[in-house]
Amino acid sequence: MRRLRYAAPVAALALALGACGGSDEGADETPGATPTAESSAPTPSGEPSTDDPSTGASATPTGGTAQEPAALEPTTDLLDWRPVDGPVADVVTRSGDWTLTVPRNGASYSLEGGDHGSGAGTPGTRVTDALIDGRWAVAVLQDKAEQRPMVAEVTELATGKTFRVDGRSEIPTTTGGTWALGEGTLVHATVASGAYCLATVDLATRTSTLGWCAAKRQGFTDARITSAGIALQTFDDSSPACRTLVAVDGEEVTPFAGVPDCKGWDGLLTEDGAVWSVIPKEHQVENAHFYARSGEAYVDLGPGTAGSLTWCAGAAYFVRDPQREGDPAALMRWSAESGLSVVYESPGGQAFLSEPRCGGDSLTVTAMAEDGDEQVSAPLS
Image (cartoon, rainbow, N blue to C red; front, side, top):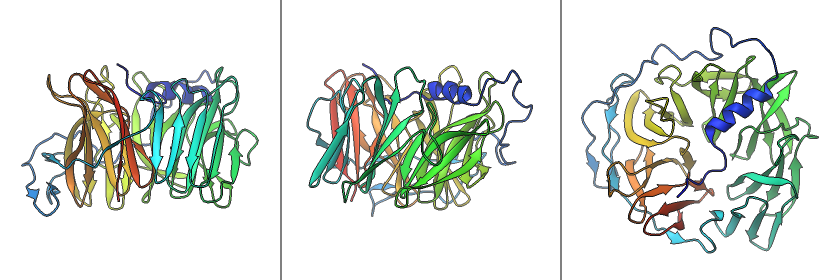
């Protein structure tokens, strides 16, 4: 069995540093973003929250600090999961009546739904990202030799109109790098004046804006967009890399509060806080621990899989691998309103889950399990 991912975070780190240029200089003594004074390592503690019978999920505690976050015990609130047609090996994302599919070989994609559909595949390229949010669909193609800038093929679902974001765009793409779609915005990496930078595209107007740029020999990856803004994982070229989770506002970045120095991995912004993961042991980078902040209250969400944090329809989701022999793999959901809950469990036997794929109003997940693989989708409204 294998974990189904478009790109590994470690590979993204290497690509991003390569894009920064071939300077022989080492990293600056001080990483580009310095965590706030609150950023000492959280130690899970505190009493578990009580269940809220009106929601069927654990209620978010009012207490908890960065140093002593309140531990949450999840309840079970399984979504209405339905099988997705087609081979489980295909990577499918459902969005209303739309289906965005990338075959196992990654050589093409298809977009089906509404009154029209589309699809493409260029010889010598592979699809690295397939994103859809109910209004827009984006397929990102990279040449297999990774020598040319990436190409994003954008489709407006309501009209079927398409356009490209590529190396000839107002702000060009680059080789490799992070992509994210949300809130009518597409973000991608670019290189400007030798610096590795973040660019945003307003999809309605097709206007591009150059944003924050990393310092020399530093980079970023894992962009995530929510209604509260854009978050990134930044890093330097030390070994292991010193990682900092930041909120992006134009040309400025602000480190997440409460995250231990150099330990962050996933991160996203909420209306009154953030959700993030840290890596307790650097030689086990897939094993993360998740936390959240709502206002001034910090909570411990428990163990999860690095790289799996996803925002969808007002809640954060992440994968939790089996914690004991015989346990299923689980998809976890957290929001400040409903607390922490298990919303999906894999078939029996040893199992792994893919990163959940948000389609705006629905969620799709792939499970690879000894008792049978499956790909399922659930509506969120």
